[in-house]
Amino acid sequence: MNRINLPLLLSSMVDGMVVSLEIFFLTLVISLPLGLVLAAGRMSKIKMIRWPVQLYLLIMRGTPLMLQLLFFFYGPYYIFGIRGADRFTMAIIAFGLNYAAYFAEIYRGGIESVATGQHEAAAALGFTRSQKFFKIILPQVIKKITPPMGNEFMTLVKDTALARIIAVAELFHIAETAASSAVSVIPFVIAGIFYLVMNFFVGQGFLYAERKLSYYKIV
Amino acid sequence: MAILEVKNILKAFGDNNVLNDISFSVGAGEVVAIIGPSGSGKSTLLRCINQFETIDSGEIIIDGDTMVHTDESGCAVYADKAALRRMRLKIGLVFQNFNLFPHFSVLRNVTEAPVSVLGLSKREATDIAMKLLKKMGLEEKASQYPYQLSGGQQQRVSIARAMALSPKILFFDEPTSALDPELTGEILKVIRALAEAKMTMVIVTHEMLFARDVADKVIFMDDGVIVEQGLPNQVFDNPKEERTRQFLLRYSQG
Image (tube, rainbow over all chains, first blue to last red; front, top):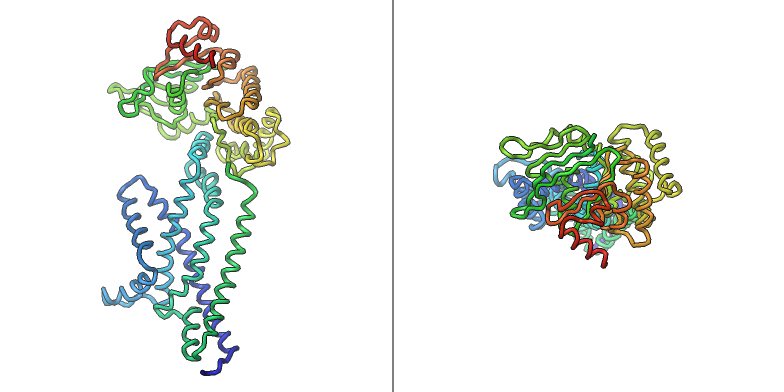
């Protein structure tokens, strides 16, 4: 068993964590707005819009994210013989498209759970459609979806580990490499602690958000 | 001059004629009560006038503007979007379930539409809102949220919210049906005060005594048709139609 150089290990694992956090945040930047667009498509009255979106949601939620990562990374070359973007970019695209599907369904659940009376009251008062959505509906949706969003965010923190399948040097990838070269589980334990710490902050963030939104109740 | 004119409205859901040749008018300052059993089409009628449902044929005129008329081929033709919106602002609507915005304070519930829709300044809107809330006896509740209020208080806020746009006519869709009996009185008192201030109102209600007392005209609907309309004492004391008599009898027996 090789001796572990702890300072060196820690510093490379911090580097890995930074990459994991980059995946986390960039995925959110893509998937949070894209999810809203998909939710709108999923709720569209027009079949030609709704059906393709439903198919998209089925594929994205029905197949392993790991498979999607491999597909996005190798697909362009294997199918078209062209080089795709670098592995990090492809990972972000795959994560973004995948998480957008989950967020879309959470948004939809939230939007559909707002009482019809809210739409009618807003319409009766003369609000335009966009005023109605942004001033009346969306704030209530945000309150309703905060708990399930917290779940998804935590899952995403852990899912960033899947990017190692296309050799993105994120936290888990570095832990795995260090563990096998040192024949030690210590890197795994450290990685576990790092994920735990990240999710601790995610959890605290959502707790704070829920408290912030608790000034009213939906009657 | 009539604020609202409804002529020969037809409305069907599939084979079911929910509104059949409905005609009536509401003059300025008049209070009209619409009574009738559940499923008689009262609420659908209100929803058609408030643009939540479309009619199949007939004519609706609000404050001289034609919202919808029927062309030679018998199809209902609606005014353009901008006109419909303008007409909507002349109408206030109070819902059975209040439908206050839960994320806004009482004050903001009343000011939001005047600010966002009419373009009033926050200050003007707040002045108007506070005056209305005072009339409703709710000025101390201005900074509270709907969930902190009783049903009766919520309904009074919703009346203030509708009044804040200075509508020409105010519709009430069973305003006391979701309230405990002891809270009904406070809403009826508010409506009575509005009637005394010559507010034009159409009230769909199951409160017969109140309808008789406050209304200038009573419309009895059953099965999608207006069976009878007239002065309250005429409809309640000397109904011409057997159906009206039956309905009132059932009601007086409780």
